[in-house]
Image 1 (cartoon, one colour):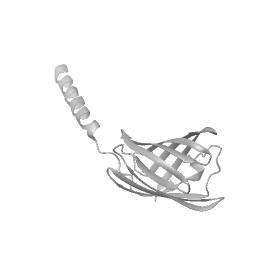
Image 2 (cartoon, one colour; image 1 turned 90 degrees about the horizontal axis):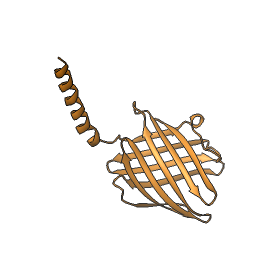
Image 3 (cartoon, rainbow, N blue to C red; image 1 turned 45 degrees about the vertical axis):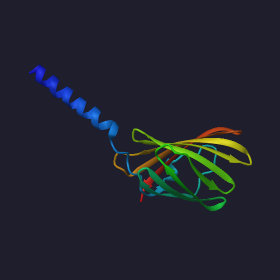
Amino acid sequence: MRQHAFKLLAAFLLTFLAVAPGAAPPNLSGSWKMNISNSDFGPMPAPTSMVTKIQHAEPTLKMSTTWSGEQGERTFDRTLTTDGTESTSQFGSMVFKSKCRWEGGALLIDSTASSDRGEFTIKEKWTLSEDGKTLTLVRTWSGPQGEMTQTMVHEKQ
């Protein structure tokens, strides 16, 4: 009996290990509205609203983020590939160079950007809740003015 249980456990573990690494990444497609009260912008002023629309067809991610705040409404569009290929996007005078990859179920985006204030790096970690209704972004900025971390919680619309 004990030997039979051991064999079943071993078979389960082998099956799990064989399937888990090749599991498909989560699909992030949809319209995501930021929950401002559950988000933390650190020392930066929070926007009054933010919506990110994502079209995700692996390995391509097309993101369009529109937010409103003290400086009016702005939109930042970018297209990324999750295979680690560098992509370039522009927002005003800032040029962003980004590399994107999956680590387990988390999407990691590493970017460098240059502006009139100097060069800075941005590290992002996007995670989708188990029920697929909440997308959380943790973003760390590093540059001449120091480092700050923001956490943005988005709800699927």
